[in-house]
Length: 113
Length: 107
Image (cartoon, rainbow over all chains, first blue to last red; front, side, top):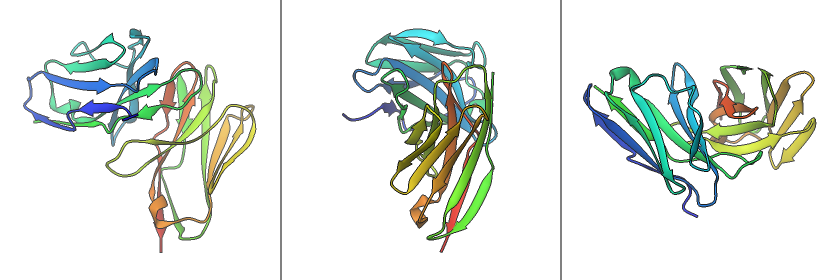
């Protein structure tokens, strides 16, 4: 398996622009997580899905953030409008379920100027 | 909510042993995980504990005491490539991470 695939690897955009991050999970993994990592706040859970259904979005910082999982093979995290404080590395991770480990994608490094 | 504490930094010499402690307070518990993260890379899974006791995996071991809310990761025979951040993560109904411990291995 190719693992969790995220795109793009790097994104540089100007404040106010819309940003869309993409994730392709490992086939057969029922859980999908979006995390954000910064030096100040570490690795924060934004939202997670089970069988394509959002279960907990309490970590989503503001209404500017939204996430979707239209099918088992694809998820997006959208920021509209983006702000400089959104600059971070965004990771998608998937899990087979139960107490199995999370598998992380390589992340998207977002820079908002 | 969850509270996960681990030291910020540790330094050790190549070939030595280092122990990274993690204490946690959670509303529920469904396992504790350790991840390794090299600079600029994604976290990778090292080990997990669900029951009390020691889990050994080559040069890495992890210990859990649920009654004390305590775990440690033991790295033996340190190598330069072990220089990385080590993240303690607790699973209640979702996986929450500590801030990570940066381990620097000196020659």
